[in-house]
Length: 233
Length: 226
Image (cartoon, rainbow over all chains, first blue to last red):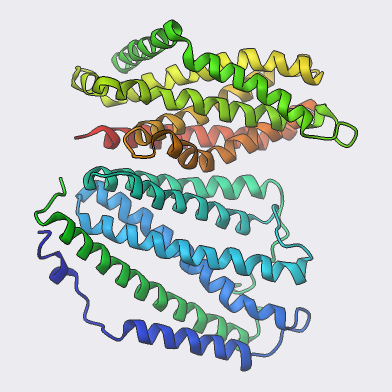
Protein backbone atom coordinates (compact mmCIF):
# COMPACT_ATOMS: atom_id res chain seq x y z
CA UNK A 1 0.00 0.00 0.00
CA UNK A 2 2.85 2.32 0.78
CA UNK A 3 4.43 1.87 -2.65
CA UNK A 4 1.33 2.81 -4.59
CA UNK A 5 0.29 5.56 -2.18
CA UNK A 6 1.69 8.14 -4.55
CA UNK A 7 -0.40 7.12 -7.54
CA UNK A 8 -3.47 6.71 -5.33
CA UNK A 9 -3.41 10.23 -4.07
CA UNK A 10 -1.92 12.13 -6.99
CA UNK A 11 -4.20 15.00 -7.85
CA UNK A 12 -3.80 16.14 -11.44
CA UNK A 13 -3.68 19.90 -11.03
CA UNK A 14 -0.19 20.88 -12.17
CA UNK A 15 -1.04 24.59 -12.27
CA UNK A 16 -2.33 24.81 -8.68
CA UNK A 17 0.76 26.58 -7.25
CA UNK A 18 0.80 29.13 -10.08
CA UNK A 19 -2.94 29.75 -9.84
CA UNK A 20 -2.69 30.15 -6.06
CA UNK A 21 0.28 32.53 -6.36
CA UNK A 22 -1.45 34.66 -8.98
CA UNK A 23 -4.69 34.75 -6.96
CA UNK A 24 -2.87 36.01 -3.89
CA UNK A 25 -1.04 38.63 -5.97
CA UNK A 26 -4.36 39.66 -7.52
CA UNK A 27 -6.13 39.86 -4.18
CA UNK A 28 -3.31 41.94 -2.68
CA UNK A 29 -3.32 44.27 -5.70
CA UNK A 30 -7.08 44.71 -5.43
CA UNK A 31 -6.81 45.37 -1.70
CA UNK A 32 -4.02 47.91 -2.19
CA UNK A 33 -5.23 49.82 -5.25
CA UNK A 34 -8.88 49.09 -5.97
CA UNK A 35 -10.50 49.06 -2.54
CA UNK A 36 -11.46 52.34 -0.85
CA UNK A 37 -9.60 53.53 2.23
CA UNK A 38 -11.38 52.90 5.50
CA UNK A 39 -12.61 56.23 6.83
CA UNK A 40 -11.06 56.19 10.30
CA UNK A 41 -8.16 53.75 10.04
CA UNK A 42 -6.87 54.87 6.63
CA UNK A 43 -4.17 52.79 4.97
CA UNK A 44 -3.50 50.79 8.14
CA UNK A 45 -6.75 48.92 7.65
CA UNK A 46 -5.39 47.37 4.40
CA UNK A 47 -3.54 44.77 6.47
CA UNK A 48 -6.99 43.39 7.30
CA UNK A 49 -7.04 41.73 3.87
CA UNK A 50 -3.97 39.67 4.78
CA UNK A 51 -4.46 39.27 8.53
CA UNK A 52 -7.98 37.83 8.43
CA UNK A 53 -7.45 35.39 5.51
CA UNK A 54 -4.20 34.15 7.10
CA UNK A 55 -6.05 33.59 10.38
CA UNK A 56 -8.84 31.78 8.56
CA UNK A 57 -6.35 29.48 6.83
CA UNK A 58 -4.43 28.86 10.08
CA UNK A 59 -7.56 27.83 11.94
CA UNK A 60 -8.71 25.66 9.03
CA UNK A 61 -5.26 24.02 8.86
CA UNK A 62 -5.32 23.05 12.53
CA UNK A 63 -8.93 21.97 12.38
CA UNK A 64 -7.97 19.62 9.53
CA UNK A 65 -4.97 18.38 11.56
CA UNK A 66 -7.32 17.45 14.40
CA UNK A 67 -9.76 15.69 12.04
CA UNK A 68 -6.99 13.81 10.24
CA UNK A 69 -5.45 12.87 13.62
CA UNK A 70 -8.71 11.47 14.95
CA UNK A 71 -9.38 9.48 11.80
CA UNK A 72 -5.76 8.27 11.78
CA UNK A 73 -6.12 6.72 15.26
CA UNK A 74 -9.20 4.96 13.96
CA UNK A 75 -8.18 3.80 10.46
CA UNK A 76 -4.37 3.83 10.82
CA UNK A 77 -3.87 5.01 7.27
CA UNK A 78 -0.43 6.61 7.14
CA UNK A 79 -1.57 9.05 4.45
CA UNK A 80 -3.68 10.79 7.09
CA UNK A 81 -0.57 11.17 9.21
CA UNK A 82 1.36 12.59 6.26
CA UNK A 83 -1.48 14.99 5.60
CA UNK A 84 -1.62 16.08 9.26
CA UNK A 85 2.13 16.67 9.24
CA UNK A 86 1.84 18.79 6.08
CA UNK A 87 -1.17 20.76 7.26
CA UNK A 88 0.43 21.50 10.64
CA UNK A 89 3.57 22.90 9.04
CA UNK A 90 1.65 25.06 6.60
CA UNK A 91 -0.62 26.14 9.46
CA UNK A 92 2.37 27.31 11.48
CA UNK A 93 3.51 29.45 8.54
CA UNK A 94 0.11 31.14 8.28
CA UNK A 95 -0.10 31.52 12.07
CA UNK A 96 3.25 33.28 11.96
CA UNK A 97 1.80 35.66 9.35
CA UNK A 98 -1.17 36.36 11.66
CA UNK A 99 1.15 37.00 14.59
CA UNK A 100 3.26 39.44 12.55
CA UNK A 101 0.39 41.31 10.89
CA UNK A 102 -1.65 41.48 14.14
CA UNK A 103 0.80 43.66 16.10
CA UNK A 104 1.56 45.71 12.96
CA UNK A 105 -2.12 46.53 12.69
CA UNK A 106 -2.66 46.95 16.44
CA UNK A 107 0.15 49.49 16.85
CA UNK A 108 -1.39 52.38 14.86
CA UNK A 109 -5.02 51.50 15.70
CA UNK A 110 -4.96 50.41 19.34
CA UNK A 111 -1.70 52.16 20.20
CA UNK A 112 -0.08 48.95 21.41
CA UNK A 113 1.81 46.13 19.71
CA UNK A 114 0.36 43.37 21.76
CA UNK A 115 -2.99 43.03 23.54
CA UNK A 116 -3.10 40.28 26.14
CA UNK A 117 -6.80 40.87 26.62
CA UNK A 118 -7.56 40.15 22.99
CA UNK A 119 -9.02 36.64 22.79
CA UNK A 120 -8.25 35.94 19.15
CA UNK A 121 -4.68 37.23 19.18
CA UNK A 122 -3.75 35.22 22.28
CA UNK A 123 -5.53 32.10 21.02
CA UNK A 124 -3.53 32.40 17.82
CA UNK A 125 -0.33 32.65 19.82
CA UNK A 126 -1.25 29.43 21.57
CA UNK A 127 -2.04 27.72 18.29
CA UNK A 128 1.47 28.67 17.27
CA UNK A 129 2.98 27.24 20.49
CA UNK A 130 1.03 23.99 20.23
CA UNK A 131 1.84 23.32 16.60
CA UNK A 132 5.46 24.33 16.87
CA UNK A 133 5.78 21.74 19.66
CA UNK A 134 3.84 19.36 17.38
CA UNK A 135 6.58 19.77 14.78
CA UNK A 136 9.32 19.37 17.41
CA UNK A 137 7.58 16.25 18.74
CA UNK A 138 7.50 14.74 15.26
CA UNK A 139 11.20 15.38 14.88
CA UNK A 140 11.97 13.74 18.23
CA UNK A 141 10.36 10.33 17.61
CA UNK A 142 12.22 7.77 15.49
CA UNK A 143 9.61 5.06 14.90
CA UNK A 144 7.06 6.10 12.25
CA UNK A 145 4.14 4.32 13.92
CA UNK A 146 4.87 5.85 17.32
CA UNK A 147 5.44 9.27 15.77
CA UNK A 148 2.09 9.10 14.01
CA UNK A 149 0.22 8.10 17.18
CA UNK A 150 1.91 10.67 19.41
CA UNK A 151 1.38 13.50 16.99
CA UNK A 152 -2.24 12.44 16.43
CA UNK A 153 -2.83 12.67 20.19
CA UNK A 154 -1.26 16.12 20.32
CA UNK A 155 -3.23 17.18 17.24
CA UNK A 156 -6.50 16.26 18.95
CA UNK A 157 -5.65 17.59 22.42
CA UNK A 158 -4.42 20.85 20.88
CA UNK A 159 -7.81 21.39 19.28
CA UNK A 160 -9.50 20.65 22.63
CA UNK A 161 -7.28 23.19 24.36
CA UNK A 162 -8.14 26.15 22.16
CA UNK A 163 -11.68 26.67 23.58
CA UNK A 164 -10.17 26.78 27.07
CA UNK A 165 -7.56 29.34 26.08
CA UNK A 166 -10.32 31.29 24.38
CA UNK A 167 -12.57 31.17 27.43
CA UNK A 168 -9.83 32.05 29.92
CA UNK A 169 -8.68 35.05 27.92
CA UNK A 170 -12.31 36.05 27.41
CA UNK A 171 -12.72 36.23 31.18
CA UNK A 172 -10.09 38.98 30.97
CA UNK A 173 -12.55 40.78 28.61
CA UNK A 174 -11.91 41.79 25.06
CA UNK A 175 -11.28 44.91 23.03
CA UNK A 176 -11.16 43.16 19.65
CA UNK A 177 -13.54 44.60 17.04
CA UNK A 178 -16.63 42.43 17.02
CA UNK A 179 -17.17 40.56 13.75
CA UNK A 180 -19.00 42.77 11.27
CA UNK A 181 -18.72 40.49 8.23
CA UNK A 182 -21.34 37.82 8.72
CA UNK A 183 -24.13 39.83 10.34
CA UNK A 184 -27.33 38.25 9.05
CA UNK A 185 -29.32 41.48 8.87
CA UNK A 186 -26.95 43.63 6.84
CA UNK A 187 -23.19 43.27 6.58
CA UNK A 188 -21.79 46.53 7.86
CA UNK A 189 -18.62 46.04 5.84
CA UNK A 190 -19.06 48.06 2.61
CA UNK A 191 -19.53 45.78 -0.38
CA UNK A 192 -16.22 46.67 -2.12
CA UNK A 193 -14.34 45.79 1.05
CA UNK A 194 -16.38 42.61 1.50
CA UNK A 195 -15.62 41.48 -2.06
CA UNK A 196 -11.91 42.15 -1.54
CA UNK A 197 -11.97 40.19 1.71
CA UNK A 198 -13.76 37.26 0.10
CA UNK A 199 -11.36 37.23 -2.86
CA UNK A 200 -8.47 37.32 -0.44
CA UNK A 201 -9.96 34.47 1.61
CA UNK A 202 -10.33 32.40 -1.55
CA UNK A 203 -6.80 33.17 -2.69
CA UNK A 204 -5.27 32.27 0.68
CA UNK A 205 -7.27 29.04 0.78
CA UNK A 206 -5.92 28.10 -2.65
CA UNK A 207 -2.42 28.93 -1.43
CA UNK A 208 -2.99 26.65 1.57
CA UNK A 209 -3.94 23.73 -0.66
CA UNK A 210 -0.97 24.36 -2.96
CA UNK A 211 1.45 24.41 -0.02
CA UNK A 212 -0.07 21.38 1.66
CA UNK A 213 0.02 19.40 -1.57
CA UNK A 214 3.71 20.14 -2.12
CA UNK A 215 4.50 19.33 1.49
CA UNK A 216 2.43 16.15 1.34
CA UNK A 217 4.23 14.99 -1.80
CA UNK A 218 7.52 15.59 -0.06
CA UNK A 219 6.38 13.52 2.95
CA UNK A 220 5.29 10.66 0.68
CA UNK A 221 8.59 10.65 -1.26
CA UNK A 222 10.65 10.92 1.91
CA UNK A 223 8.84 8.05 3.61
CA UNK A 224 9.05 5.90 0.49
CA UNK A 225 12.78 6.58 0.21
CA UNK A 226 13.41 6.02 3.92
CA UNK A 227 11.36 2.85 4.04
CA UNK A 228 12.54 1.01 0.97
CA UNK A 229 10.25 -1.55 2.44
CA UNK A 230 7.09 -0.40 4.28
CA UNK A 231 7.92 0.33 7.89
CA UNK A 232 4.52 1.49 9.08
CA UNK A 233 3.32 -0.87 11.77
CA UNK B 1 -14.87 0.18 37.97
CA UNK B 2 -13.83 -0.93 41.46
CA UNK B 3 -11.35 -3.27 39.80
CA UNK B 4 -9.83 -0.41 37.77
CA UNK B 5 -9.57 1.79 40.86
CA UNK B 6 -8.01 -0.98 42.92
CA UNK B 7 -5.31 -1.83 40.36
CA UNK B 8 -4.77 1.91 39.81
CA UNK B 9 -4.12 2.29 43.51
CA UNK B 10 -1.63 -0.61 43.39
CA UNK B 11 0.28 1.16 40.64
CA UNK B 12 0.12 4.49 42.45
CA UNK B 13 1.40 2.78 45.60
CA UNK B 14 4.27 1.22 43.65
CA UNK B 15 5.31 4.64 42.32
CA UNK B 16 4.93 6.31 45.69
CA UNK B 17 6.98 3.57 47.37
CA UNK B 18 9.80 4.11 44.87
CA UNK B 19 9.58 7.83 45.49
CA UNK B 20 9.38 7.44 49.26
CA UNK B 21 12.47 5.20 49.34
CA UNK B 22 14.59 7.39 47.07
CA UNK B 23 12.97 10.79 47.71
CA UNK B 24 14.99 12.16 44.80
CA UNK B 25 12.26 13.92 42.84
CA UNK B 26 10.37 15.06 45.93
CA UNK B 27 13.34 16.77 47.52
CA UNK B 28 14.38 18.43 44.29
CA UNK B 29 10.80 19.64 43.73
CA UNK B 30 10.49 21.03 47.27
CA UNK B 31 13.89 22.71 47.21
CA UNK B 32 13.11 24.07 43.76
CA UNK B 33 9.83 25.52 45.06
CA UNK B 34 11.53 27.17 48.05
CA UNK B 35 14.35 28.57 45.92
CA UNK B 36 11.85 29.90 43.41
CA UNK B 37 9.95 31.67 46.22
CA UNK B 38 13.19 33.41 47.21
CA UNK B 39 14.15 34.33 43.65
CA UNK B 40 10.70 35.72 42.84
CA UNK B 41 10.73 37.84 45.96
CA UNK B 42 13.87 39.63 44.88
CA UNK B 43 12.83 39.85 41.23
CA UNK B 44 10.30 42.61 41.97
CA UNK B 45 10.46 46.03 43.51
CA UNK B 46 8.57 45.54 46.80
CA UNK B 47 7.72 49.25 46.99
CA UNK B 48 5.97 49.07 43.60
CA UNK B 49 4.07 45.78 44.02
CA UNK B 50 3.13 44.32 47.36
CA UNK B 51 4.08 40.69 48.06
CA UNK B 52 0.38 39.90 48.61
CA UNK B 53 -0.38 40.97 45.05
CA UNK B 54 2.41 38.81 43.69
CA UNK B 55 1.68 35.76 45.82
CA UNK B 56 -1.13 34.06 43.80
CA UNK B 57 0.74 34.24 40.51
CA UNK B 58 4.03 33.14 42.03
CA UNK B 59 2.35 30.29 43.88
CA UNK B 60 0.85 28.81 40.72
CA UNK B 61 3.88 29.34 38.53
CA UNK B 62 5.99 27.53 41.11
CA UNK B 63 3.55 24.62 41.45
CA UNK B 64 3.51 24.21 37.72
CA UNK B 65 7.27 24.06 37.33
CA UNK B 66 7.92 21.92 40.41
CA UNK B 67 5.14 19.60 39.24
CA UNK B 68 7.00 19.12 35.97
CA UNK B 69 9.94 17.67 37.92
CA UNK B 70 7.72 14.94 39.35
CA UNK B 71 5.83 14.39 36.12
CA UNK B 72 8.95 13.69 34.18
CA UNK B 73 9.95 11.04 36.69
CA UNK B 74 6.55 9.37 36.43
CA UNK B 75 7.43 7.50 33.25
CA UNK B 76 11.15 8.12 33.56
CA UNK B 77 11.33 5.37 36.22
CA UNK B 78 9.61 2.98 33.83
CA UNK B 79 12.15 3.62 31.09
CA UNK B 80 15.02 2.14 33.17
CA UNK B 81 15.51 -1.55 32.31
CA UNK B 82 12.34 -1.38 30.17
CA UNK B 83 10.23 -1.64 33.31
CA UNK B 84 7.28 -0.34 31.30
CA UNK B 85 7.20 -3.64 29.35
CA UNK B 86 6.67 -5.56 32.57
CA UNK B 87 3.91 -3.17 33.56
CA UNK B 88 2.20 -3.50 30.19
CA UNK B 89 2.55 -7.29 30.18
CA UNK B 90 0.90 -7.56 33.61
CA UNK B 91 -2.85 -8.24 33.66
CA UNK B 92 -3.72 -4.63 34.31
CA UNK B 93 -5.82 -2.45 32.03
CA UNK B 94 -4.24 0.57 30.33
CA UNK B 95 -6.79 2.79 32.07
CA UNK B 96 -5.59 1.52 35.44
CA UNK B 97 -1.98 2.27 34.55
CA UNK B 98 -2.86 5.81 33.50
CA UNK B 99 -5.07 6.39 36.51
CA UNK B 100 -2.47 4.94 38.88
CA UNK B 101 0.29 7.10 37.45
CA UNK B 102 -1.96 10.15 37.64
CA UNK B 103 -2.92 9.43 41.27
CA UNK B 104 0.75 9.06 42.25
CA UNK B 105 1.54 12.36 40.50
CA UNK B 106 -1.42 14.05 42.19
CA UNK B 107 -0.15 12.97 45.60
CA UNK B 108 3.32 14.15 44.62
CA UNK B 109 2.07 17.59 43.62
CA UNK B 110 -0.13 17.82 46.73
CA UNK B 111 2.83 16.92 48.96
CA UNK B 112 4.93 19.67 47.39
CA UNK B 113 2.04 22.11 47.92
CA UNK B 114 1.70 21.11 51.57
CA UNK B 115 5.25 22.33 52.14
CA UNK B 116 5.32 25.22 49.70
CA UNK B 117 2.08 26.94 50.76
CA UNK B 118 3.12 27.44 54.41
CA UNK B 119 6.48 28.66 53.10
CA UNK B 120 4.63 31.17 50.93
CA UNK B 121 2.59 32.35 53.94
CA UNK B 122 5.82 32.72 55.90
CA UNK B 123 7.97 34.43 53.27
CA UNK B 124 5.34 36.67 51.70
CA UNK B 125 3.28 37.36 54.81
CA UNK B 126 0.10 36.35 53.00
CA UNK B 127 -3.03 35.94 55.12
CA UNK B 128 -4.24 32.62 53.70
CA UNK B 129 -5.96 31.55 56.92
CA UNK B 130 -9.41 32.95 56.13
CA UNK B 131 -9.60 31.43 52.65
CA UNK B 132 -8.11 28.02 53.40
CA UNK B 133 -11.26 26.06 52.48
CA UNK B 134 -11.89 27.51 49.00
CA UNK B 135 -8.14 27.59 48.35
CA UNK B 136 -7.83 23.85 48.96
CA UNK B 137 -10.72 23.24 46.56
CA UNK B 138 -9.06 25.39 43.89
CA UNK B 139 -5.72 23.67 44.47
CA UNK B 140 -7.25 20.21 44.08
CA UNK B 141 -9.13 21.13 40.90
CA UNK B 142 -6.05 22.74 39.40
CA UNK B 143 -3.77 19.88 40.41
CA UNK B 144 -6.09 17.33 38.75
CA UNK B 145 -5.92 19.28 35.49
CA UNK B 146 -2.15 19.71 35.59
CA UNK B 147 -1.48 16.12 36.53
CA UNK B 148 -3.82 14.53 33.99
CA UNK B 149 -2.32 16.33 31.01
CA UNK B 150 1.19 16.07 32.46
CA UNK B 151 0.97 12.31 33.00
CA UNK B 152 -0.08 11.71 29.40
CA UNK B 153 2.71 13.89 28.03
CA UNK B 154 5.20 12.28 30.39
CA UNK B 155 4.34 8.90 28.87
CA UNK B 156 4.97 10.37 25.43
CA UNK B 157 8.06 12.48 26.16
CA UNK B 158 9.99 9.61 27.72
CA UNK B 159 10.02 7.77 24.37
CA UNK B 160 11.40 10.69 22.39
CA UNK B 161 14.97 11.70 21.68
CA UNK B 162 14.50 14.94 23.63
CA UNK B 163 12.97 13.22 26.71
CA UNK B 164 12.76 15.72 29.59
CA UNK B 165 13.36 18.68 27.29
CA UNK B 166 10.16 17.98 25.42
CA UNK B 167 7.82 17.68 28.42
CA UNK B 168 7.63 21.41 29.30
CA UNK B 169 7.17 22.32 25.65
CA UNK B 170 4.27 19.89 25.28
CA UNK B 171 2.66 20.48 28.66
CA UNK B 172 3.00 24.21 29.36
CA UNK B 173 0.52 25.44 26.73
CA UNK B 174 -2.02 23.10 28.34
CA UNK B 175 -1.15 24.39 31.80
CA UNK B 176 -1.92 27.99 30.87
CA UNK B 177 -5.71 27.95 31.33
CA UNK B 178 -5.29 26.02 34.60
CA UNK B 179 -2.63 28.32 36.02
CA UNK B 180 -4.54 31.39 34.86
CA UNK B 181 -7.80 30.22 36.43
CA UNK B 182 -6.18 29.07 39.68
CA UNK B 183 -4.11 32.23 40.07
CA UNK B 184 -6.99 34.57 39.22
CA UNK B 185 -9.36 32.76 41.57
CA UNK B 186 -6.73 32.80 44.34
CA UNK B 187 -6.15 36.51 43.77
CA UNK B 188 -9.88 37.26 44.03
CA UNK B 189 -10.09 35.37 47.32
CA UNK B 190 -6.91 36.94 48.69
CA UNK B 191 -8.14 40.45 47.99
CA UNK B 192 -11.20 39.69 50.11
CA UNK B 193 -13.69 39.38 47.26
CA UNK B 194 -16.65 37.00 47.77
CA UNK B 195 -16.32 33.47 46.40
CA UNK B 196 -18.95 34.15 43.73
CA UNK B 197 -16.51 36.45 41.89
CA UNK B 198 -14.16 33.52 41.45
CA UNK B 199 -16.98 31.21 40.34
CA UNK B 200 -16.32 31.62 36.61
CA UNK B 201 -12.68 30.61 37.07
CA UNK B 202 -13.62 27.63 39.23
CA UNK B 203 -16.13 26.47 36.62
CA UNK B 204 -13.39 26.77 34.01
CA UNK B 205 -11.14 24.53 36.13
CA UNK B 206 -13.93 22.03 36.57
CA UNK B 207 -14.67 21.94 32.82
CA UNK B 208 -10.97 21.56 32.03
CA UNK B 209 -10.71 18.62 34.43
CA UNK B 210 -13.73 16.85 32.98
CA UNK B 211 -12.67 17.32 29.35
CA UNK B 212 -9.02 16.41 29.84
CA UNK B 213 -9.50 13.51 32.27
CA UNK B 214 -11.79 11.97 29.64
CA UNK B 215 -9.57 12.84 26.67
CA UNK B 216 -6.29 11.79 28.29
CA UNK B 217 -7.67 8.46 29.58
CA UNK B 218 -8.92 7.70 26.07
CA UNK B 219 -5.62 8.80 24.50
CA UNK B 220 -3.26 7.00 26.87
CA UNK B 221 -3.71 3.45 25.46
CA UNK B 222 -2.49 4.77 22.10
CA UNK B 223 0.78 5.92 23.63
CA UNK B 224 1.78 2.50 24.95
CA UNK B 225 0.62 0.10 22.24
CA UNK B 226 3.34 -1.77 20.37
